[in-house]
Image (cartoon, rainbow, N blue to C red):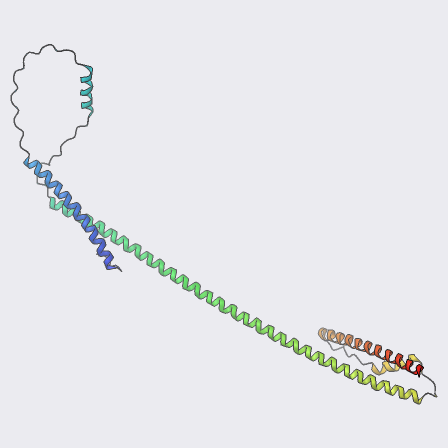
Length: 270
């Protein structure tokens, strides 16, 4: 039984072409065989050979020439073709031969059709497998892109959060520094005015030496560190804070020295 093809017109065209070739070959063979049979049947029987007349006594012949011998040898070397003969006995059944030939051709046609559909089936299976691989690869690529996009979003959010934290810490640090500077300036101003008042009231008494004054001022400004409970990060922040405080004090010291020089100069000029 023939397979049901996916394209019926292709199978029909193939079958018609092969059937036409088979019919043409069978018709040619039948015609040739009939012509041979008719020639054999129509050929007249060979006429009986006439009795040979007594030959006259041969005359002495001359010696044969060498060319005649060569011609005889060439004729002997030529292949002798035999006329085909019809076998004796029963008559040849051409219908049976034709039927066997047709059956053989049909079997070959069936084998070609089976091979065609087997090849077609294999191609369809390969095409389906290829489509499945393409879809699988596409899904994997989409999943990889999704994961990459999520990771990129997480990194961007983390960077934004860190930036906001740094800005907040910088703003807080700047505010603390400004507050410390203001408090230092205010304390320095009050201490300096009180110191002048004390100096004016005690002009008649014993004058304090510069070293004693410095000790008193430093004692008033000195603060306890209280760093025993701090960890490494806090200690770093504390050291940085003290360094900035020292810079502030140095700046204020320079300002006071310049102010004292200017006041002395004004007193001398006055």
